[in-house]
Length: 118
Length: 111
Image (cartoon, rainbow over all chains, first blue to last red; front, side):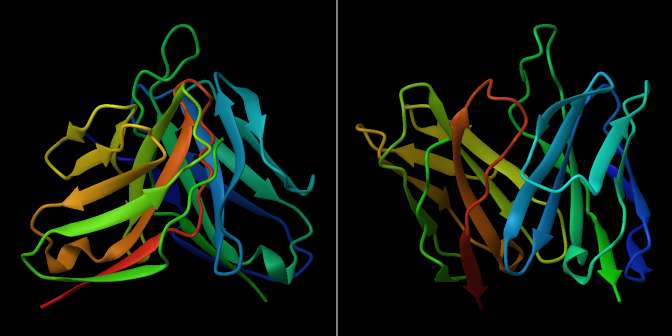
């Protein structure tokens, strides 16, 4: 089966611009999470969406936002880009049961979008 | 989620077993131990998880001490492709889909 697909793979933006990243989860997976990875801070949780609703949010400023569509595809947006936003942005999907609990405890990550802000 | 402590780096000879330790002394009774690895420029990959019993799958074995304060991930016959950063994560089974990654252990498998 197809894995988690993230587009684009690489992106270069200028300070002050905004950017939208896309994530298509594994078919049937309803939960999508986003992570930021930088050399200094490591892997950090951004937010999680389930059934088009944000369920969890990490400690990031409001410039970072996301949404999920009815087909479970998700997008994240970063507005007013700063140099420090340069990072690998990773998306993970997982299968969630009827009660909203994870029946598959292994989350599948995509290969990420490498964003460079200049 | 409980905090984990891992050595920053380890070396292993190709074909030998790689034993990666993780300390989680503040783990609570309903928290699971998960292991992920990240090969360079790829997203993290799930390896294995466990609660208190030892677990084995096609990738690795997970040994959890009786007091659950530490665990060891074992790659029985390491190959060059196992070179990666290995993350030990402790979290509740139904804590939502937020994983808290620490610094991990950079495993270098050498010929």
